[in-house]
Amino acid sequence: MNDTSSGIFDPIAMEVFSHRLMSITEEMDATLVRSSFSTNIEERRDCSVALFDARGRLVAQGTQIPLHLGSLAGGVAAVLCACAIEEIREGDVFICNDPYLANGTHLPDITIVTPVFWERRLEFFTANIGHHADVGGAVPGSIAGGARSIFEEGLRLPVIRIVRRNELDTDLLRLIASNTRDPEERALDLRVQIATNERGAQAARHLIRQMGLEAVRQAVEDVITYTRRRIRNRIAELADGDYTFTNYLDDDGMGGDPVPITVTVCVAGERLATDFTGSGAEARGAMNVPLNALNACVYYAVKALLDPDLLPNAGLFDAVEIYAPHGTIVNPRSPAAVGARSITCQKVAGAIFGAFRSVLPPERVMAASNDVIPAIVFSGRLGRRSGEYVYIETLGGGSGARANGDGMDAVQVHMTNTSNLPAEALEIEYPLLVDEYALVEDSGGAGRTRGGLGLARQIRATVASTIFSVRSDSHTVGVPSGVFGGLDGRRARLVRNPGRADEELLYSKVARIELKAGDAMRIETPGGGGYGAPAGRPLQQLADDLASGRVSRSAAERDYGAAKVAAALALDAPEVHDVSADLK
Image (cartoon, rainbow, N blue to C red; front, top):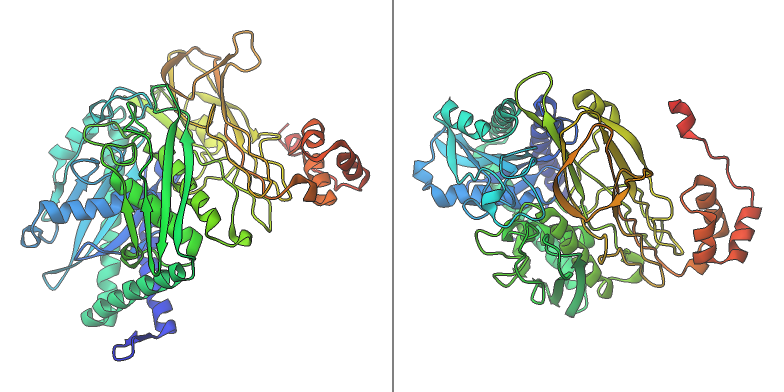
């Protein structure tokens, strides 16, 4: 794909080969999602896939969840560390999940790694990760903000062969499944993960058969080299200097003071470094971020900010340096708990985006998004078979406003990208009812362009002894900040039994609350920050906000002024269709 004497790449050949690599991961993703048994993978798509070369370098990653890159890359590296190349045999498959023993990011994310051979020589690894709704531990769902060590969070898996020369180790599979609250679901999903990698291995061998081994090897080198050169060119366009930003967590999972997440982005020529000195100490609770998860946050943010269309592979990693002091919340010591690391990862990504506000031109700056990923967990006895159900849902919120448009409503941002579980599927599968699933009025920050709205999810237990847990943030301290005069988005809320005499506002990280039949939990996620002074918002857009119910008249008068609101209401606002009428 390139002239080795001149170093000039053939752009057409490069694009074609890149798409062929992506087609392998897309086929793997489709297999994993369509064949899985759990709602968390089948419906919510909380999974990712990737292809690595024999040296463990990322060649292509599926377009799913950026945070999973940490566990995928870490898992392959752990396999190569645990096993000499000559000890890896055709027909072997490896399993792992542990952050300290196998470079994972938290225990529910189980990684399957399969070596791919061609003519008895190792050429690739296919890898996938699935977030399993439960892997044991003290709390259903295996994640609680207040966990004090990883030993409370579930079954720890170092690198182990789960398939040896094409023979599945059913004893190991049974051992893993039996340490979870729904053994049947765990065993079935793990079998699907193994099969998914084999589907990717077949596609990789087909590619070699079509192109020839040497051509494939050279094309992989070219793609990685091209990515490295392209991202360095983007870095070189930035002004040299050090740029610092601090985000905040409400607490470290155990209450107490706010925790800073500080990053300094250092630009020097074609090199970019991120230094997390100044971030909070290692958390007492489960808010810690293992180093592989931190790396994934940095690589995602750099790609998203500088070159979103760049193919994610090892070439991106070579241009970025990452430093995090050991013993801090972004590089903890074993056996610190890490289950709720996704919330802190969102804050890390938001801090990097914040630091780049001083680097990028104003038209490329974005206000802060909700920068959290609240997760609610309901569990109880299964009715149709033995075991316990564990329903987990991670929720979106508002994204930040941009120079040329409002933020998006009710979306997941940064490190996560899962789908919602439809209310119909939830109510069919579990003894739960969805009371409300709606946008949160007035939650987006006002501005010339408005921040996106957060969402409300209210779920009611229909049977007694239902267990509820949640991990969330930005309830008391963290706030989605506006830029260039834009106002901040609204914080999150968690309410038990809203509207009843026993209504109770809860802490953002609670575990093992036992619900009676008829009890409800309501969570409202943060909105995004606004961009530019509210005085600059066009009247028609303000009129649309009022007509759609995204902004109340009282909030609009507070943020935009009564005179401007009156002028907006005088316009012919579009008729808004009442979708609630369709549900009656």
